[in-house]
Length: 241
Image (cartoon, rainbow, N blue to C red; front, side, top):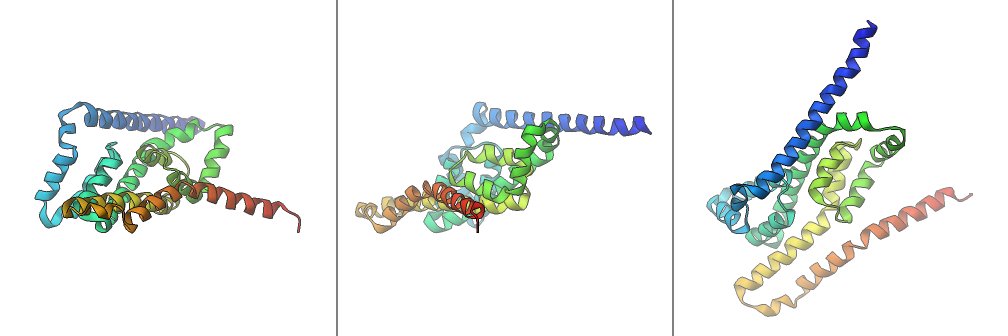
């Protein structure tokens, strides 16, 4: 019986290592395919634009699927977001980009959770365990903060999957955290597209453009504001009544 009990952790660890190797292999293959094979020729703005144009009424769905897959395969988010804004405009582009980004972020999280979490948990010692536990307890705030400071999107998707953070906290933290950046980028690109096709270059000096730029600049101050508020709350809790 003892031998069976001792063998269970060993099998679990071996399974975790095997999953981790598959996870690493997936990342390496994805990067290699995207960067060093003919596939990259089909992942340019022009090629993707032609593909989505040919999709007709299904273009929005096709775009969101392409975005989600692209996120998991390390395709630059700026390319996909800019393409969405250029094709669908400022407002619909924002909606389609946000949905595609959320689908891709969720898929990448579950890939990391399924293939990497067991191995990562086996490596967590006493010092790292407290950080892992803290992320688990404060998952929403942690994810939201990292999204607001524009932490690299795809690495964070996979990375959060191997931590203790709950998917619910990750999902809502990501959904809220990427709204500002997504809206600003799609709003600006969509406005430039409208100006380009209309030929009315005076529109570049408009309320919409200044609003999007101002919102983008303000987004960099949001983490500092949140940190200041949390610091004041912590001091308030620690002060004697």
